[in-house]
Image 1 (tube, rainbow, N blue to C red):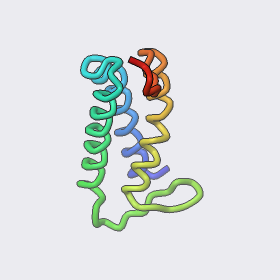
Image 2 (cartoon, one colour):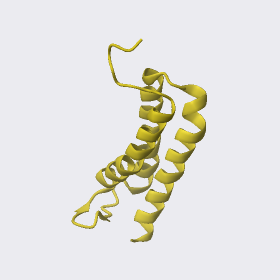
Image 3 (cartoon, rainbow, N blue to C red):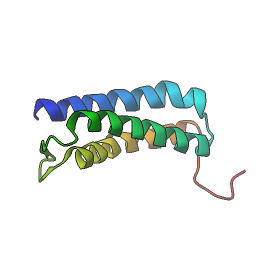
Image 4 (cartoon, helix red, strand yellow):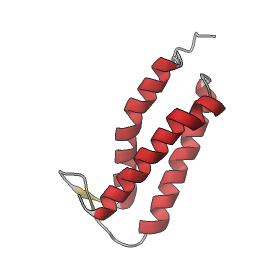
Length: 102
């Protein structure tokens, strides 16, 4: 893995860990709507940081089976790291996506 890819993976890992272990419990708790809005903001923050560095550079990022640009690399890696954290958080805070739950 090249240094550019590694720096993005490290940034995402740190941001997701800080979000799910510190920020989300304090700001969102078990409120799914707050959690989703916070997650959108944090995701936009990460994409903005990576975009400021790589937008327009033409740098190619490797996803093992294909090459892609910074946006798709960041989004795919972000989702890969975040989904297990989100599942863990939802179980820990008894969050359900059930629309009938009050």
